[in-house]
Length: 191
Picture 1 (tube, rainbow, N blue to C red):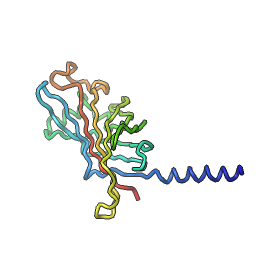
Picture 2: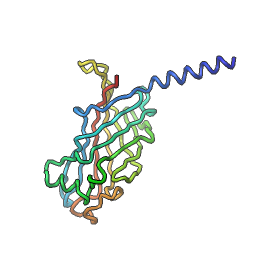
Picture 3: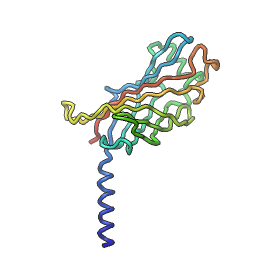
Picture 4: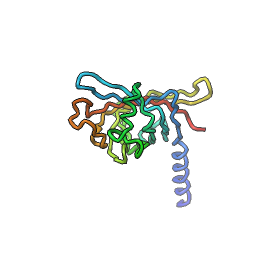
């Protein structure tokens, strides 16, 4: 009887591990965007062009999944080269010393139909802080016409740049302290 119980437990663990699928971010259909207030009257938008990311989990129960991302800080793009170069300098991201940013999941909690709270650790300039994203599950597409299975999400949050020592303009009057982040993600099921 004891052997039968162990066999059942081992089988359940095997099924659970197979249910966790690896999904790779599709950079052609994903966007890492940010927006910051400028002079207190308007907003400057930007994005990061180069990043790698995975979701390991199952669409049947996203709460057991994990997201992991690495972003190339040098790939920042606001559409103005002079501003981008300043953002890469020691005044902001200091990409000569800190060329990447990272995010790793701590938990995912369902809050409504297709809505979740994604909590994780965000690392910018080697400073790691917990960040909570509002996550919307866009759905699953079994075949995109090219034989690929796709998974979609949108994640939004607001962070205080001073928490990560991005402290140029300490008054926050010319450049806002809060950064709105919107991440639109499409993943392809890994083979």
